[in-house]
Length: 330
Ligand code: 5GP
Ligand code: MN
Image (cartoon, rainbow, N blue to C red; front, side, top):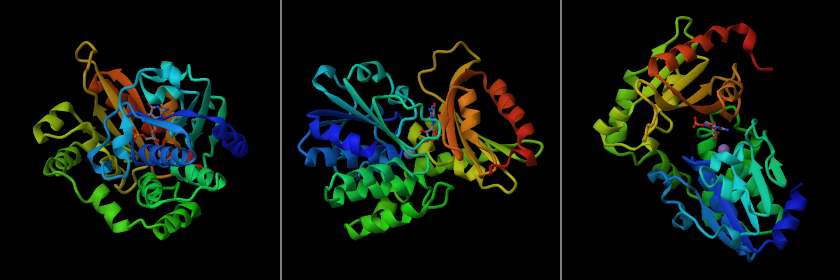
């Protein structure tokens, strides 16, 4: 499939590249690296992400090229969709993107539904950035420091700094190559993990205080409300990564972060929430997320729902009854 995609991209002239809404380091890193690569190959590229780029990723080279709004979709002959398990993850542009004649799906989510005309889906890849790197090598392109920084950041963040279960040998070997290409790990780490606003740290305090545990101790729930964001003067992106604290508690198999979404249209007391799930490796949370219309990986998944907070917590608590010894992954 990689060869066919390379042949197709060699014919492509106007390429749209897009990744998922509320992008993380991998969605942004894979988008930038692939975009720079295709531009080097002589394509006209447009980089697209419907959400704002979180502050911590704005240091990435060429990040200013990512556009939030597009018109004139007919100009594209090819779309490259990165880090999306389903096409709708790109957001409200999905219908316009679906009209592009050739759609290439590059991803590593276990729940990927193989949308598009060509798929390069490797669920064993630590990050979409790993797949992009392999593709760039196959395309015989040099990895410059801008591409290397994007790839390194994608792998660093998607593996939780080489701690999550998707951390594989490629994570280290590719990152080593990226360092050889000029990436400074301490500089990336300083931008991504060491430049938080005071409000973000105060939000951490509120989020930690919200943690509750199920009776059997296997499930933790953390809640981030709009009110918490307002009183700490923070943005939704400032909640990224907070769930890992709820996951670190001894005996906890699954952590859930209930995140109240902005622009709620639901009749009270119902609201729209995004639920992030993280597992210690013994429970496949992508299965749980799929049941609620979401998706992700065995160890990290998410879904959105409309519910009252009380009912949503109860629904999540009910799941923990199934987190006994029987649900170990093989
Ligand atoms: P997060 O909890 O950080 O939003 O997402 C964790 C993982 O699950 C990410 O890989 C993300 O792409 C995926 N994910 C989160 N929400 C959804 C969703 O609503 N649908 C799908 N298909 N995947 C999701
Ligand atoms: Mn990813």
